[in-house]
Length: 512
Ligand SMILES: *[C@@H]1O[C@H](CO)[C@@H](O)[C@H](O)[C@H]1NC(C)=O
Ligand SMILES: *[C@@H]1O[C@H](CO)[C@@H](O)[C@H](O)[C@H]1NC(C)=O
Ligand SMILES: *[C@@H]1O[C@H](CO)[C@@H](O)[C@H](O)[C@H]1NC(C)=O
Ligand SMILES: *[C@@H]1O[C@H](CO)[C@@H](O)[C@H](O)[C@H]1NC(C)=O
Ligand SMILES: *[C@@H]1O[C@H](CO)[C@@H](O)[C@H](O)[C@H]1NC(C)=O
Ligand SMILES: *[C@@H]1O[C@H](CO)[C@@H](O)[C@H](O)[C@H]1NC(C)=O
Ligand SMILES: *[C@@H]1O[C@H](CO)[C@@H](O)[C@H](O)[C@H]1NC(C)=O
Image 1 (cartoon, rainbow, N blue to C red):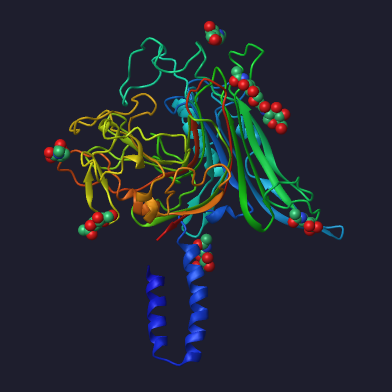
Image 2: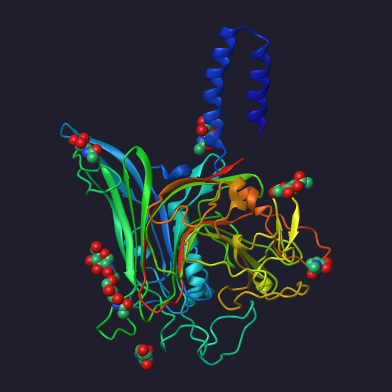
């Protein structure tokens, strides 16, 4: 802000001066504004351009915990972080990568100690994972001036819920087991953690070809790495397809953005899977967590003053049940508007998602008001109640559900799934529609979908300031800060195995 003000003053005074001076000031303005631009990014790695990558992996069960670790995999938290340096030996020049996280670190699991681990977490898989994330964060951390940041986070989640286990709380309250049927689960072990293989980033001078980028030249040093794996090892009949996830990353040294190529495939036993790349806050409770996290958002963006820029190329959609989130924003505040403090009984996770799969219908309709938020707010701040059938943009909302802990809901309403988060949650799910045009969001079904790769500049801050979220009557409106900004898909149960593939790059969050 202060810098902007200075630029303004400079320009104003130059207008009263000679033409020559104006040109000089215009040139310095260009320099100044590009500096201003880079200093207002909220992420540690604006546009994913930094050669020294910082990326981590986490896997969650249905209620965003671990439950039980997969055999010999350790706790499902891992990272790939390195420093790149150039070497000039034997006349040739080259690069070397100095990894900050070892494979031994990545395999740490319950029973293994590491610096900073608390006694109570040593044998508790849930607490252990949360503390391992902090430990990996410390290994990856980049300290720049007064700020610190850690990594992009790849999040994988298994939607199976064994309701006979009583493992997941109901709106944050410990719940009793109940008979199967409501959620997918093949039986014992359906909430398992995945087999994870890490391919540490390496560098080569002859990167393998890619359709979108010319890596064919032997002169271009390319860095590549990835994570992949499957859930299908507990109940594999030996036949049939297995679930699969893969995220690979690739970048030419000194050029452009990292490209994160994601693949996700569901299977008979794992029909509901989620895979996202997240920019989470570097501290505090990010969306869906109830413990301290590490991430990429060195500044937590606040509505309405931020934008999200990214490039998305969806190669395969993942079928009709794939709720592809062009952007998913997550936060947490209580129904009284106060910030979350880790008390799962009163904290409420808030999500809003723009779903770009054109096969996703609007469940919100004049005949299904319970699936709509009570009102829509236009860019000029006019509220349109959902019963104003001529004016309300029903097609702009896939589904709205209220927190299960809300006490003063306007009827009719539906409440969100009480089990799939550590605490109650609220969802505002959007669809491409002309009402979102002012924010640079997709306006038509099919925008940004398969065959329509785009670079988006989304006014997420502006839009999120004008979405309905529940609060108790008479309470101070919550400060809408967004501790997680994610891109990826959630493939819900369908009658066949589904596969999605997409490439994400150039991700940035700018404070405006
Ligand atoms: C850190 O501070 C120095 C000196 O003020 C500045 O030149 C540099 O751009 C800053 N780096 C970042 C990443 O903000
Ligand atoms: C494997 O799945 C089948 C249902 O397809 C189920 O009957 C069986 O109990 C499962 N086995 C295990 C070990 O969970
Ligand atoms: C790829 O790079 C090579 C070497 O620079 C060049 O000869 C070739 O024409 C390029 N191909 C494309 C499709 O740009
Ligand atoms: C992960 O990738 C490696 C190397 O490409 C491959 O050998 C392995 O089979 C993959 N994992 C799974 C579960 O498919
Ligand atoms: C707000 O915008 C709507 C159309 O989006 C328009 O119909 C309405 O008159 C505007 N209201 C004000 C107060 O400008
Ligand atoms: C629409 O909803 C508002 C708010 O609940 C209510 O005051 C109004 O009477 C309703 N109008 C109709 C036509 O149902
Ligand atoms: C298994 O995968 C193949 C190839 O992707 C697909 O044709 C087949 O339908 C899948 N099987 C099931 C049961 O979905």
